[in-house]
Length: 179
Image (cartoon, rainbow, N blue to C red):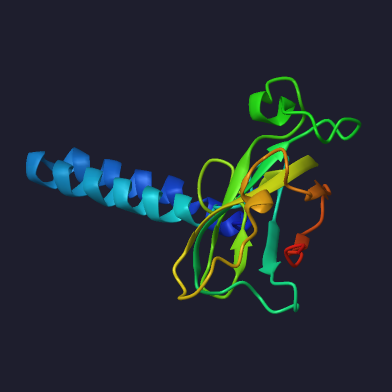
């Protein structure tokens, strides 16, 4: 992972430790202050180095209704399970030990958008082929707007590829229920 701090800023944690050690040499009371100062400075500066984990990319999207408007009035998440692109209807993604990529999820926001995370918010997704399905609660009045086939792994028609080294954006469109 690359650091986002400049060369001059990367010396600050060392400076904080040095100042903390100087306080520690003065006496017992100052030792506590010095250690606390060094710890706080190091933690604060380490937070500036946050970035995308190696091998992961930003992947976002929107769930769209058949009329092209975003899915609103629904709470839930979108799940991306790795698949073998040669066998997209296999359930191997549910047991994805040998496939590239890791299962990732994104909470559906009130505006119908989502951002994928693998282990923690903002850590992105690995480049791979994925089967996509929804886990939603209809909180808007009226009949459910998400057909059942989009809420289960095997019947879901959505198969996508997350590309490496680029920001990926997916428009996942729900089809109107067949009558």
